[in-house]
Structures are given as structure tokens and as C-alpha cells.
Amino acid sequence: MPTIERIDDPPTGTRLRPAARLNARLRRGLAATGRDFLHLWVAATVSQLGSQVTLLALPLAAVLDLHADAVQMGLLMAAGTAPSLLVGLLAGAWVDRLRRRPLLIAADLGRAALLATIPVAWLLGALHMELLYVVSFLAGLLTVFFDVAQLALVPALVSRGALVAASSRLRASDATAQVAGPGLAGVLVGAVGAPLAIVADAASFLASAGLIVRIRAQEVPRPAEVQPRLRREIGEGLRVVLGSPYLRAMAGASATTSLFGYVFLAVYVLYLDRDLHLGPTAIGLVFGCGGVGSLLGSALAEPAARRFGTGATIVAGRILFGLGGLTIPLAIYFPRHALPLVLASEFLQWGMLVIADVNQLGLRLALTPARLQGRVNATVRFLTAGMVPIGSLIGGALGQVLGYPTALVVGALGMLTAAAWFAGSPVPRLRAMPDPAGEETVED
Image (tube, rainbow, N blue to C red; front, side, top):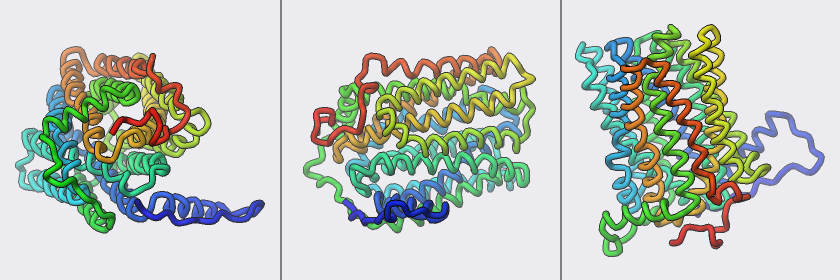
């Protein structure tokens, strides 16, 4: 466990300038989480910024350059997320057997190489939907291993008391990227075209790998003689998540959000482009507004948990997230006010979702023993991200048959039901993170 440096607060009554207060806060945050985590955090921020560019540029390449329809858009989104369903559980078992840092570096380098094929193919006049499907699938496969390994590495870099702070900083990275990434993507797509804009993401993965190389924490994988069969390890991860009333409720809520969220997202860019007639820059503004909400949510997650309790904050965040989605049906039925309503939905939903997710992640990491971190994180990812390709295919089919507005309404109403998983669970009554020696800790 890293040594925690002590950062002395200024004497009582001392008034600091805003810049000095910010510097002191950053120093305290660095002391709480350590320099190794700082490298991981910056790497996550850089790669997430690039990924936000691709998140918008890839579907825009399909829509603007290849004239994709709703079914093709659903297939494209499903291709990038299907690996979570296909290998998510296996990834957790492998991550718990191996050192996490080399896995992170290999995944970053592999994703950089894959994404570089898209601008090269476009320059050669050989870009087609089949290539986008393949690249999305293979990059998604590496992302599964990267995300599971990254979360499993966090408890080795920070103290247990700093887990929520670390979770909040990782989500702040997502939020910061979500603020800047879509706007950057819109500008890049407008300037050089969607395929060439993806170069920024490939470069971000190279930068991320360079930062992760600097992590010095020593990891000791389990000896081969104590490693049980993969099937048994996978089953253990499933039993832990489904057997814990806390983890089961949180995973169920996240899975429901993923399913209906991607019913919605499968046709969202098509709706913005073809129904609202927004250009790449304006679409980037819409996604960036959600990033502002995410950034605010990541800043409020810890204070909200201290004020209202961890469980109440998680449940309230899910409920308000669902209610925020109801502005989308209003936008559809009142098209004159569609853009401000869409912007309001992006801001409120992402803010509330991040507040809930930061506290869920911190609670999950606190409940899970070190030897089970990879499998528990992979199981939750399997149950949640595994819903993404299913939702994407449903959304694409609904958009093709019934129209984009109908698919959006179905997705928005479905997301509202996610909070029902907490009815009857002990999560709402949880005031603070459980004691690692207490009854609420998952059995090791």
C-alpha cells in the first residue's frame, strides 16, 4: 500500500487566495491517492479524451461518409460492445491471474493500432461499414480487458479510505473528457472529416501507455499452483455479485440503465442529424453539455454521500437520472423547443448518473476482497455492458421500423425503471462505506 504523505492545512483563520486554495486541495488529493494513482488517473483522462472523439466521430463517419441506416448504426454500436457479453467474465478471471500494468499497456497499444486503420482506409478509398464493425469489435475486446484491469489495479495503488476519492477522480476524468471531447470532435470532423478525426484517439492511447509505464507499484500474481480452473473462478465472481444484496441491486440498476440507454443511443445521432438537422459542431455541443453535467456530478458525489449517506445518494441519483430522461419525449412532441430540452436532458442525466456511479463504484471496491477484484468488476461489467449490444440492436430495429422518435421514447421510459432494483434492498439504508471487517463486507 502506498505511503500517504501528510499535507498540513493552513492555520485556522488563514484566508487563502482561490489559486492557493486550489493548489492545497490538489496537494491533499495527491497525498491521499499517491503518485502511482496519479499516473493512472492522467492516463485515464488522456485516453478518455481521445475516446470521446471517437465516440462521436465513428458514428458520424458511418452517417456522413457511408450513409448508414438505423439497422447499420445499431450493428455498429453492438459490435463495439459485444465483447463485454462474450468475454467479460473470462476477462475477470484472467486479470486476477496476471499483473494488471502490462495488460493495460498492451491494450492501449493494440487499440491505437486498430483505430489507425480507419483514417488509413479512408485515405486509400477503402473505408466501408464492414471495416468499422471489425475495428469496433476488436477495440471493444481490448477495452474490456483494459477497464477490468484498471479498476482491479486501483486498490493496490490507494488506501481503502481513499477508494471513493479515487473513484471520483476517475469519473472526473470521464466527465472532463466528456466536456471537451465532443466539442473537439465536432471541430475536428468539421475541419478534416470524421475518419481523420479518429487519429486523435489513436494518439491518446499511445500517450496513455507511456504514462502507465511509469507506475512503480509491485504486483504479485497468484502462484500457478493455487490457481483453480477458470470455470470455477468465473462462477465464484458470479456468486459473489448475485449473492450480495448490495452488489446485486447495484448491478441490476446499472444493467437496466445500459439496456434502455443503448436503445436510446442507437438512434440518437441519427435523430440529431436527420430530425433536428444539427451539424457536427452542434452535435458535439449536445454531447459536451452532458460532459458538463458529468463534471459537476463527479465533484458533488463525495459531498452528497457525506451529507445524505452513501445509499440514499445512490438511489436518489438513479431516480433523478430517470426523471431527467423524460425531457426527451417532450423534445419529440414539442419540436420547436427540442434543442434546449435535449441539452437539459444531457446535463441533468449525466450529472445524476455520475453521482450514483461514483458511490456505487466506491462501495463495490470497498465490499470486495483484493483477490476477487478482477472477477467482481468483470461480472458487473458483464451484467451491465453486456446489455449494451442487446439494447443497440433493439434500438436500431425500433428506429428502422417505428422511427427514431419511438425508439427514443422507449429508451427514455425504460431508463426510468432502473431505480426499482433498490426497492427492498439494504442499499438505501447504508449511511457510509462499510468497515472492511464488518458484516457488510463480501466474504473472502
